[in-house]
Length: 203
Image 1 (tube, rainbow, N blue to C red):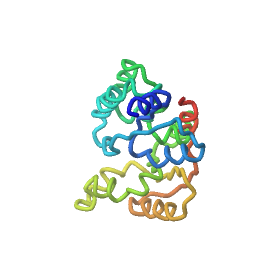
Image 2: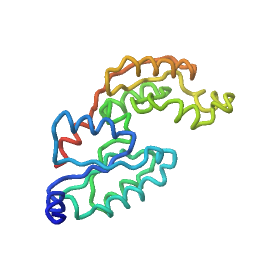
Image 3: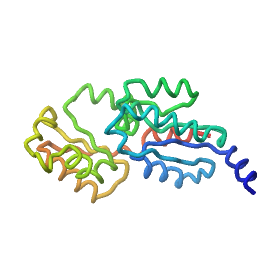
């Protein structure tokens, strides 16, 4: 039985993903009934230490190599300065395109064009809205040192919520986050953007 289960796994594909994308990836897989596609996630808090992402991804690839027909990586560059791409080239594994999740949710070309037009935007996704207090307020120490707010956000003028789901509660939370940071607010519905295209191409 163990051999049969292993052989079945070899016919399937694995997506190694950032934990911040877990909900969205699983939603796309369920919607499309892609039973061939499996997901494993690395901790979302690796984004606080982007220099650790490339080797963490490499270790996961090597741990599962041979157990799946194909391996894909659902990480953008995510602040690794091209090091993740170097690791993936060495390992022969493809990742989703773009510098960060804001870009592939919006469409990379569209995002880069709009970011160039207005570089003072601060972006949130569904995940970041849900965990705003923990990641932004507590994570940056603003609950203990509110005087640091201007140091972190003084160069921003607008908070843009890039929404993957149409959720009124998240809209309310995102608007409250903008008010808390002293920024104007804009809502843009992106859906899953190029993430869905990437997963569809995984086989």
